[in-house]
Length: 260
Image (cartoon, rainbow, N blue to C red; front, side, top):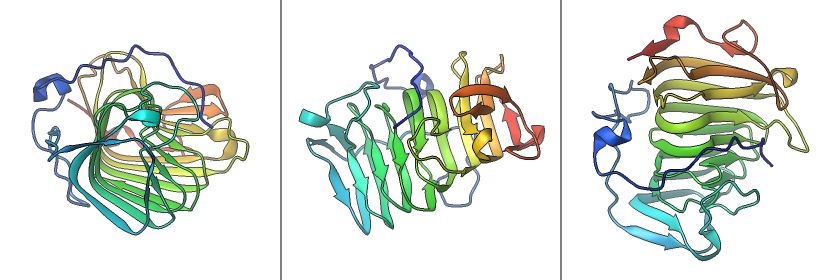
């Protein structure tokens, strides 16, 4: 279950230049290292259609193969209830993967999980949904063309995202506003590269009435002279109630946000 989608025209054409993607240099994806000024998207080693969800337990290294939906997984819109390309069991790690278009509902984490160097070329319903567990880790990688959300947090616990690039998006992270079972959730963003599009977008959307907490550090926002990217949007479930840093829910200061 997800929060209501915000309509936006989706652009399907993949461009062939780094400049068109909003990325011009190299993003360092070593855990704990700061990203460079911009990110370069990886070139897939091959492409593989996926007609039924791939279950992952333990560690799966995709070898930078592009996986894309086909058959029952060929959805690329915001329809609820789509199945994912990958479903991770509790404790699983998925790394070195590119998810192409159609992207269906991306990745589902059923418990604690790690996503390492995973790239979404054209986000479908969501890029990744965190459904159970207590700690989820996303390190390296990036996502673009997300008509609504990139990361959807439906279960309990804390999501840690570091060294990640996002562009052409509406919301990078959303704590579910209308799930049948609600929790207090936390999200930590560290070393995040954001490319603005000139329209309103949110890095995080959290439920202050559920005592959610978002911590933002090392955020670099490119191409956003109009300051359209909102670092932290506060909600009471699905009702927007304010933005900006505070000492309780949205933990960041102006020095944590760099505009270029």
